[in-house]
Each structure stands twice: as structure tokens, then as C-alpha cells.
Image (tube, rainbow, N blue to C red):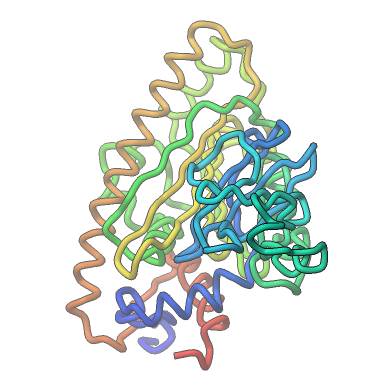
Length: 364
């Protein structure tokens, strides 16, 4: 029984530099990764950027068509777009090389005097392009070509993301947070409710039953559960006060883990939070968290509802931040090749770790 309860990720995989480098190549690059949101890319020249390990990605709107590239100028390797989002042409700020929707440098200052590049040369100097697809609010990019389409990769979660996007159009928060923990510890923590009664005794534990039903689809997983009476009563009052139009697909609580680094929570069919867990180092991560509310009449009470949701989310997030930092310290002191022990309530961690081990097999 003991052997059956062991996970797939040994303690040293949570802090080794070479492990993170291998993860970027074998876990992140072949996967469809959410890098941002459609609402930030509505207009010509709108752009967003994302960081995957050492790699910067830019997604740019070219006359209504979205394209994704490595965010590095072909000339002398300066970063092209340097903000998280904005509106400007795809032009290097160093020497002014300007790129079109094919990634080709169509504007090279003093080309005739300095380089003499013809069209064939410019084509050879095109930016490295990445595959891009969207579903609902979400923009996905894959850095390594080939493999399944986004609908194939997501399975049933493709329809779930489309559904929650339609139900929750009211965007109200977009923040980023740095934690002193490996990105996998963040995902492990999000995958289970076993810690809720202790870590979230005065927050999440007051509203969510931990009798959670787990299901899987490919490398991804979900659990659904019931909100406690006090939470259901609060949401009932909110629905009346601002005329919420909730979904009945997940009427109480749903949590999706989309491999490798996405966590989606959907509460009362009306409150959507989408998070990505970005590795910034072997022992650090950055969480990008974005929230939406279901359709409502926008009355003044909406502001009070949103303030309450923000305050609650911040409390839960800070509790998770602190306990993950504590767990990170423990990984450095644990026997290096010893994996965690995982019980029934941690079944989604086991599923996540099997998917991870499959990608990393034979690498380290």
C-alpha cells in the first residue's frame, strides 16, 4: 500500500536548476499555454507579452488577425515589446526594425546604406512564429510545432472554457503575484482540497465542502463540489441584488486543472477565476490571476460584490502563498529522490504528476 501512495515527482525536482531547464523544453514548449486574453487584443496594433522561463512571447493584432512570435529582434536580439500589453507597431525600440504579420522585417532603417537586404534576405530574418488559437476569453500559444490542435489538447475543457467565457463576460480583476515556491508546488496545492480545513479554516473552509468528485480528461482534471449553506445564501442575495444570470452547468463549485500550469475556479455558476502558474526560477513562480463575473445589471451593488470577492480571494491566495513557501523550504531538506505520499483526496496531484513524469521520462 505504501508504494501505491507514492507520487511521481521527487523532492529535488522542486528546486534543481537543470530540472527547470528540462521542464521548459519537455513540458512547456510542447503544450498549449494560455498567454493572455482576447479583451486585450481587440484593436489593430494591440499586443500582449508572456514569459515562459527564459523565453518572451509576443501576440500582436495585425488588422484583426492575431499572430504570435518570439519577442526578440532578428537584428541584435533586443526585446521588441517591453510591456505586458499595449498598442504600438511591432517595432524594435533599439534600431527601429519593424515587422509585419508574417514576422518579416518590412522596415529596416538605412537598409540600402547599411545592409543591402533584398526580399529573400528579409524572409530569412523573419521572427520565429508560434502556433496560436483562441477559445472564449483565452489566447493559447504553442512554442514547439506539431501535436494536437487546441480542441484536441483540451478535450472536454475546450467546451468548458467556451461556456464559462459566455456566462462570465464582466471582467473585473487582472493581477500578478510572486511566490517563493516552485511552480509544481503551486499546482499540487491547487489540485487538492485536503489542506482546506486547516490552511483555510477562516476562509475557504467556511464555504466549501471537501467532499469533492474528481474526474480526468487526458492530462487534465477537474473536481466539483458543494458550497456550504452560508455561501449559497450569500450568492442567492447577490443574484437578487444585481440580477445575476448564473450557469447551471457548475451551479456550486468547479475547479479545473489544465496541464501544465492552468487553474480555473468557477463558483456558484457566476464567479470565474483563471490563473496561470509561471516558473520564474527553480524555487519561485509568478501567478497571473484574472476574474470575471456573470452577466448582471451593473447596479451600484455590483461594486460591493466585487470588493467582497476580491477581499476573499486575496485572503485565500495569501494563505496558499505562505503554506507553499513552507513546503518549498521542506523540499530542500527532504531526501532528494523521495516523492510525496498522496492519499485519495490528493488524486488530482497523482494525475498531474503522472502527466509530468510522462513528459520528463528519460530526460533527467
